Length: 132
Figure 1 (cartoon, helix red, strand yellow):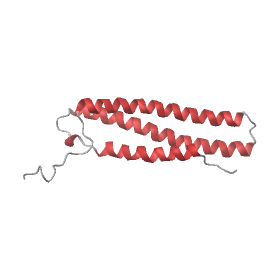
Figure 2 (cartoon, helix red, strand yellow):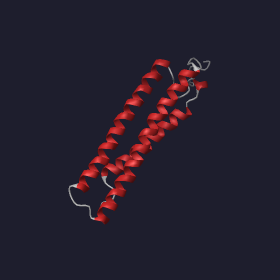
Figure 3 (cartoon, one colour):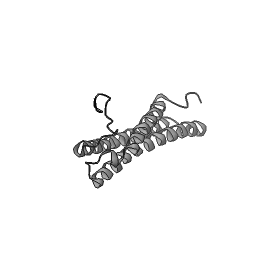
Figure 4 (cartoon, helix red, strand yellow):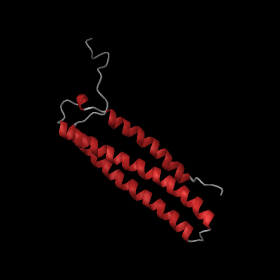
C-alpha cells in the first residue's frame, strides 16, 4: 500500500489552504468598509464569493478523502484493472469539473465586486495623506 497519497491529493490539500485564506479575506471584508456600496449588492457579492470558495474547499477535501478511501479500499478488495484506474480517473475528473464550476462562480463574484466597487481591505490613509 505504497503511495496512499498522490501528488494530486497534495495539490488538492494545498488548494484547500489557499482557498480558505481567500475565504477569510471575504469574511473579514465588511460593508462598513465600503459605505458607497448598497447593502443588498454587498450581501449578494459576499454570498456568491463564499459559495465559490466553499465549493472549492469542499470539492478538494472530498477529493482527497474519496481518493485515499478508494485506493485503500480498492487495494484491500483486490479490484482489478481497469476498474481500479477508471474509478480513480472518475474521482479526479469530478474534482476538476467542480474546480471549473467554482472558478466560474468566483469569476462572477469578482465581476460583481468590481462593478460595485467593493474594496477587500479597508483603505487606510498613508502617513503622507493624513494631514501633512
